[in-house]
Image (cartoon, rainbow, N blue to C red; front, side):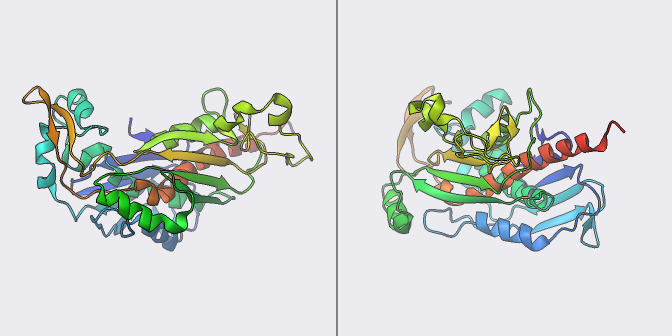
Length: 333
């Protein structure tokens, strides 16, 4: 549904062209000092403006209406709201009859019997990830380890010094392109994860696949490990901290963190909304017709989705971290 987490619960609300989007965070321990400059810096990383990003420029001025007092969490739910201001709903009027291929327009119309807000993708828009960035920025201030992200490939391009030139060419073609983002953490405390159905890698995959445009999640050596034998893939343990000779498993053993850094690669698909004409189904005329999409869209959403993935990962990790802390409240004495 619209809520994620067991102890650290995040409820996401809003749609792309409604008055506001936002998030309610429940289960935040009291007394956590919150540095709002971290929230602002993370929102800035998501912001459009670079070559290949949308010309829709939202202020992303957030408002925290509850859960904080004197810069510290109070223990009550934290509510964060972000207004939508730079909207052009008229750009989407034709899509009610002529849904975009690759987007949720048609399936959402069927599922919600035509009552869904289709403007800007509505509930399925990447716009909602701004609220997730805010929630993840708070989660990172609870965690005792660091998370980073890095764009490592866009389409066929691995030399990202040429990224602007590459994306300008894709834009001239009226097309879009995907990319790969690498996520890393500093060494995790051992034991994060709740088998059977809340294993660390299972929760990581779940939260990352919840982000619009994500089509692949690769942990550790991942799919390229298909060429390795067990003797090559196994990670020999070197000491009591859990440090291993290699990290093919990406920091996860049996669904639990093993004391090593978590390593993940995420494949983000090309943006569905492109300027190039496409032949696709027209509902009213019950036949395929040429669709030319209007509006403002990213040529490469991978360019600014990294912070979204980083902060979404933080949401999964903080929930498992708090769950793991409960084991320490009991003893045999």
